[in-house]
Image (cartoon, rainbow, N blue to C red; front, side, top):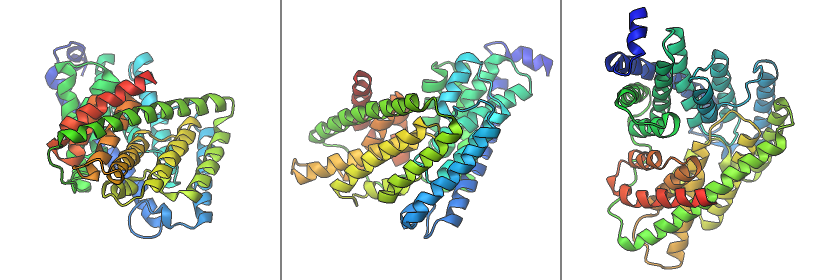
Amino acid sequence: LDELRIQLARPDALLPLALLGLLTGLLAGAVIIVFRLLVEGTQDALLPGDGPENYEMLSGGMRILLPLLAAVLLAVMFRWLAQGVHVLGVGRIMERMAFHQGRCTPREFLLQFFGAALAIIGGYSVGREGPHIFLGASSGSLLGQGLALPNNVIRALVACGTAAGIAASFNTPLAGVVFALEVVMMEYTVASFIPVILAAVSATTLSNMVFEDQPMFGFLTLGSVPLQDLAIVAVIGVLAGVASAVFIHAVQTVATRSKTLPIWWRMPLAGALVGGIGLLLPQVMGIGYDSVELALKGEYAIGLLLLLLIGKLLATSLCIGLGVPGGVIGPALFIGAMLGAMVAELALQLSVGLQSPVGLFVLLGMGAMMAGSLQAPLAALTAMLELSDSPAVILPGMLAVVVAGITATEF
């Protein structure tokens, strides 16, 4: 083992790094499968009807009570168990990479696992992807620390776990690789690229053995995009960039205003606020992929799309700003989906000669919002391609993510 550690400290230790990447992917994939089974199984047991996110079918009282019950459990967890760990998700991973050589702790892992599960089950407007990234990255970090591996290897395993988290979340292995290198590692080298690819592939394969091996939005039938529709794509990019900037500022404002409040008081406050919003707009509770699918099929009116966009942005800003241990990728995709559908429906109402299906613009809105809010254009573009299993999305997708990224930066 000592000889292996010395070998891994060199930059040319490709084979052992590749094997460690494969092991990290399997470990992270297993953790994410357990997390999803816990969350979705509990939602199936608690919520009426078929499907894991039927918060719309809950009574008004239960839409308020469920987040408050989750808030009490979260408050207890952070009051007596956190010991100062209050920031989790992608932000925590980037902080550990920047200042601690990617070293995560078992306490952080457990807080993220059970905290995010409680938040999602309780109907908080947060995503599962951020927790998946953290759980995957922590799995790699803890594996490296358990084997007493050099710091450079621990950092590489964090990137492997990050890719595995994204890949297993969406069945998008390539997007996971790009996200890990673009956002977490912020570098492209052969020594990091190959282990990350193996981690994404192994995690996706393991996840597909348990969940269905289908693109999330593979039901979309997309053809080549007429040139005249690219103007609508540019409009979606601009609006998504503005929405991304508003989203970021809203989260920062809530976080700044509430930082003097102990986190065990912030949890009940978040629960009450989300419950109030969910009383009026139950679609914003939880991750909301069922609502995204309806928007892709063009089944929402313009007025409702606008209300859902505003409601999701507000609810997620409150949750994340108040410190709820969830992710922002899922809500960003939800907001982008409502925005894209709204623009497409408006174009149809104004008879501007829209020729592509509404679902295309919904998908582009999702990618543009992800690119603008996370400043990860390549990951967003790759995610759109893999989620739809349609190469036709690449050209308009490139335009949408670039315009959204520039607009968000300027705002």
